[in-house]
Length: 435
Image (cartoon, rainbow, N blue to C red):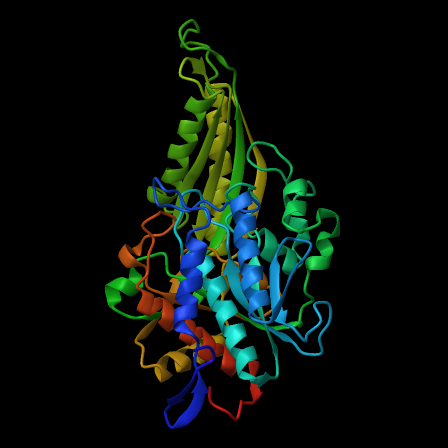
């Protein structure tokens, strides 16, 4: 039953449709899923990503809502009676992303989008009138798995165009322009995707924790107080290709050997020197990638994270010094060809309180914790107060096919999101009937 009315603490209140929530999560999990590994690959702006976005829009239309796509490729879902270009009310924005890493899990991002749609649909179907307009968003290319511009959609909404390349390319040098057009966006009109400061009353994001804290403590809900900062550098290591059997070791300019030193230097920055919380090389593309050829060029990514912006900056400076030294020692050139930055962001104390009260109402144990992963909320924090809700991750793992959360916790998190949204949108009236 959708928009179910339940008795809670002696007063009438609304509840989400748990079956509908879980059904949509299962539907999305089939899009981009590998029959071999069970993992999901929906890289931003890929065909599978477009299929997931089409599914979301179809579900929104069937629910009597009004989905649209902005110039950045974000899917925006609003109540049908509200114009997509103007409204007299501030928005309560809720959402996450539909794209995944390669061979990832079914919940990262998608869970938050489906829950946001469920909250919006429940409010509209119930006839609840609110002070703020509830809006669900599926942000484009949060992961940056194919096109190395993570947080693309939320950066555009926040007006961070200066941080985006004018002609973005994927890891193979193919342009984003056409892929964005196929997704319904328009690179030439990117500025139109921005929401002015003050147009969003608050932003709420529900997410799986992606770590072990909640599972270990036994708490059902995490109230996020801060989101880690992230610096992603895409490097081009250029050496000289050659025959692996005829080229003497002396004088080689092996780009992959230099890249291996970069990997170790990156780990050293965090593990031995402690300059930032974590440091990771997550992608390496050698060219040519053949067994009997010295690698002439490598494209790779370095990911630095810390909740302190100055520590992250110190770690980046140390890495750049290490890159210069590695290039000199190996006879290669190492260039930073792309970079993405997201500063650490604190969540709103008022929204944290709203989440805590909603959790208390539902009788769920909770704790306050930081997020070690980056989220679209960091970008939206430029234009609005933000709040984040976590639910436990089984085994504390994410970005892998085994990523999972107990269905009861998925439902519980969505109920907390709904209660928090009700507190935030400020209902002016409730429906007088029961379904």
